[in-house]
Image 1 (cartoon, rainbow, N blue to C red):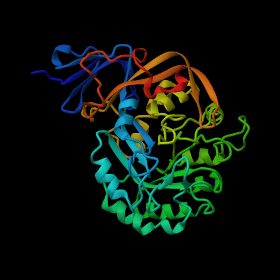
Image 2: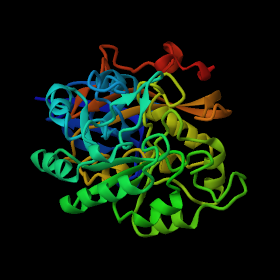
Image 3: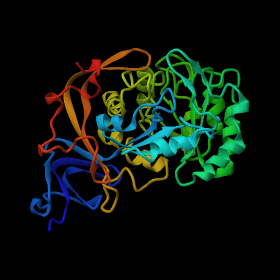
Image 4: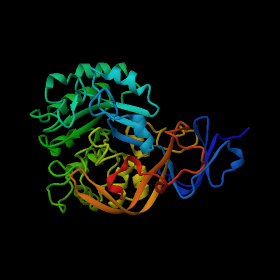
Length: 406
């Protein structure tokens, strides 16, 4: 009887959790990583998939998504997104609140093929009015931000809820300033849980928010455009906010969270030039940005890659770093015995166009294209198909039909 159910052969394995970047094979058995190494015996595998010339990485983890499809206006279908993006774990960033979390769990999380790990919104209804025609922030009325209800529901779903999410700013909490953050911190402190914090337009400013965050909290939308971007002013030569450096030094996780309006090439260029790299790359994909400008996690990764972030750092920020941020060291790794979550990427060379959330376009010479993935050893979508070799992007339309891929 074959020792392995599946052997991914001939690829370049990049696993920052183990410091691996070398030609290697990856073997899967019983839904777990069975072996990683050069020239594993093909005769020991029931099935061999040739991935020569491709990158084999731990299953991608998107730390910021909105996948309460059908239960919130901004939700996208998680399984469709997984098939097109190669993401094996999606962290839902507070789509549901205490009032509708049970439905999110029963009707979507427990039925999805992809792994979904949620934050609980401090606002009772979650993100309830987010569309192109209706936009009402869930933090505009403090009566909705019940600390006791958030704590109750989080405890009822202990083991699933990762922490508390709060959205701050002129859009999410018009007129409320910093108050929603204080309420969310009360809930997180009572639970001993991490907090994920969104800021859009001020008030509040980042200089008000960042000093209140604790080690392990996640600050998302880190590279927004001015105002409330990472810099002290609108000029690309401005310095990264000292509060941002200080937050990182005390253990706050710095996340991209691209989304519809939260990633600027100018901010990213200036921050990277000053040596301030994000800890985590995430897409903040939702109904209003899945067809651009965010699209998915590999597209967001490609943007950071073309801005000068090293490939291994990009992979780490999309695998082991988000796994660490949510307290799941069993994910984001190809260690023997870990769940067989694996993503295969094509690192393409050419001339590719990318667009940020401000509408600015940028050309770059590289693009990471997902070819397929495994979740617990099972294929995402139809890959690997009967044809033993995954097909490159030249053999099919680019994922999502991105208009900037030309």
